[in-house]
Length: 353
Image (cartoon, rainbow, N blue to C red; front, side, top):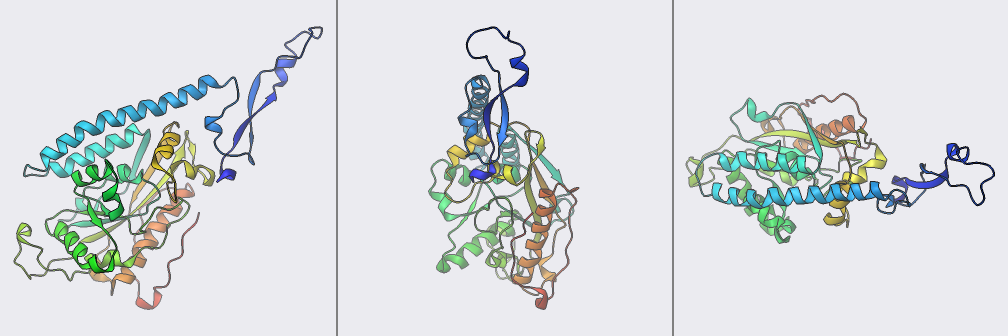
């Protein structure tokens, strides 16, 4: 990742040499200026040369201020959501939209939404399927998409994060073969209540330069073979229910410091591998003028696909093409994809741009 960053080096500024008299003894005073060296090591934001202490202090103060703002926002919001969960009504769904939207703004992100939510024109529940490159995806899409997340079981063991996730009615999945049926039923019960779900079917976060293949097992709950979920659904046990709609969503971080974000800028946002969340937060929140685009594509009806593998392929293709479009800074427009024939479904290859 060292080659992805540039560092600042001190070189003499030509104008400073002429500003001193030729007869003055000792070395000429030289004003430092920034020259970028592509082959330098990363981390220059935290090790600037002398003379740039004011700029460095401002960046660190900005990150600390954003951290304090998020803490001040989160603590009372947790209490409010805990109360709303005990009260009948739709407030426990709408309040997380408000919270995550303010959370993303506190991070310094400008969230641009292109397209329309499938929930605006349909009374069927919707499974929002998005690519995943960072923990930042959670506040970004959580402030746009109405519904609880589907998260891996590891999150349930993270301090503080697990409490926020439970208050947000997150559905945890362990991906263990023996618990697949039970977890699918839990997600189907959420849909049967009329709620939506937010799904990251890559199974892990990527480096932001591609969309990883989707796990087709995540689409089992959209096959339309579920039965009435239970007493809260208002349906008779054993009665068939209409499958939810699938809306593909592409998320790309496309502006950094007011400029288009290229390949070298993606590690500022991407969180993957063995990165720790604290240092990633500290680096990212020092920047200004950051933007993320959430591209809402046309919804798909699972009933028009022969099986979940073809459904997974069609959704992945839409999300990957949309993300590639945004990474190339082309005009953003929602995409629409029809059902694929079984003989057209092949292995999913990561889409780079």
